[in-house]
Length: 375
Image 1: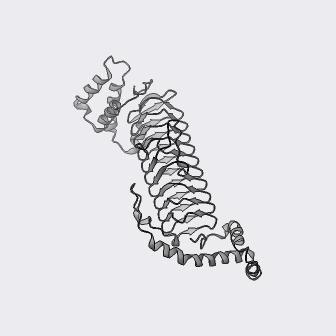
Image 2: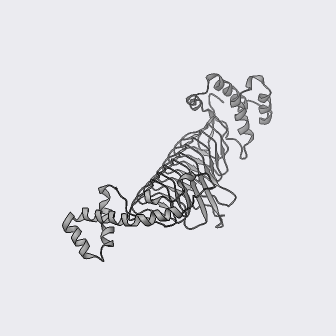
Image 3: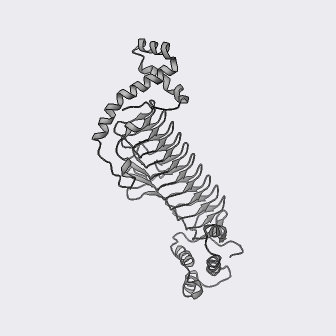
């Protein structure tokens, strides 16, 4: 397969020149002629282009023999046919001949692409990135330098949707840090338009019947960690160094401040705000703010709800329900408070119903109530 990129910037020539020169080492008369006639750098570049043209005919014939690969996780099938003839692959990249390369893919210097990898159309793999094992990348993704996707040492699969960004030296779909893992099949599924920044880590599941799942439009900032078997919804923000332990479930539109930690098996409801530096050891209901070590309820996430566009009247009703549910002065049992609110005409509101639902769904207990104006 052709591994010389037609049209790569001349800035990369310092890397490509030694590779082409090595290829021509057995033909010293040709190398000398190129150096003399066109100059060393330009001559090597022309030799590389000639090699690419020679190889293209064989690549095109191979492409015709490759059937359309349909990916069970729903990654765009239109880009699953091997179109490496239209791809730009640097000569120093190691791309397995059986890898499926979509149209217009760019693979930079010193990258590794496994035999079972599928790269969707328009995706760019920057220098030094590595795709291992059964790794499916959707269309128009950007895999930055040093990123590692997949793990070559264990049986597992990684599927990324479209328009995802994987930052420098991020580790996505690598082996879990669970001592109970016995070497079985494991998986990771990532949706569309996620921004996974530098040095973040997202691990495979720890069992065949479980899957680590990331939804759509999430921002996972630098040095964040999403452990095995976590489920992350849509449009969440994890600020730098947020750490989610195994089996954590996070809803939609949550916001984690920097340096947060979440205990394994905890649940975080939608529109919740986890203040910076918080250590969460119990479940966080929807729409609330928690803060501290160990994190305690500090009221509603009022700013977040306003920014999302909820009407003030709805937020006001939710605030009243919050005060009744989490009142420090009430002697009524929690379940009875929830029943009383459900039977009250004043609280027939979808946001209130969602808050009650997340309180009832708690398995580890709700974060304690701290002193706050909404408490």
